[in-house]
Image (cartoon, rainbow, N blue to C red):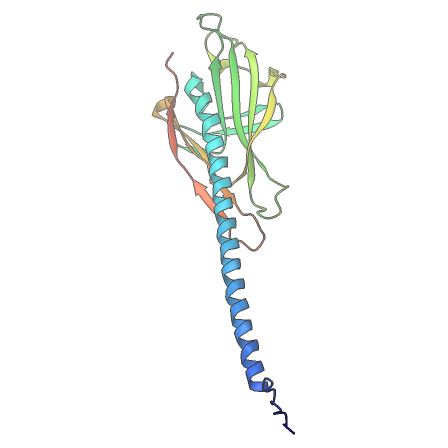
Length: 215
């Protein structure tokens, strides 16, 4: 009678099991590390794009106003509808700007649009608490007491102005500098951004100079 050969089934030893577990741990650790690095880099790129968008938005808005204005209010403190503007002297910097844009071409009867820029604390941003929002003030149809002389405008009599949010998450490095005896303005917007709490904030700063229009 033929017999049957019994084959022994060899199992894994404890050492082999430990080695397999270690290899699996190393593989998962490498995957997690690369995944975390990718997510961090993605968040940084997103933050940089958001900061760049904020800076671009600021420059586009301000450049249009500066290029159309004919007068820059400088070296004085002005309060317009509850907002106080500390306006820079020539070649000095400030976070405030106040300009006059002529609405009519005829001298002797020019009315102006008054444009103001100022910062307010951004209390809604919990990720970056020390940031500011840039606001734009606009009052149309303003006639100076002395014809064609916007420096004589009485801001206490202006009641028709409106305020609009231009950009969020700006730093206190944001500044205006009036140059060339009021013939040009240098704007330095600085934005900061981050997507998650444990990510370092990304800062982006540009400096541009714009000439005001000729009379």
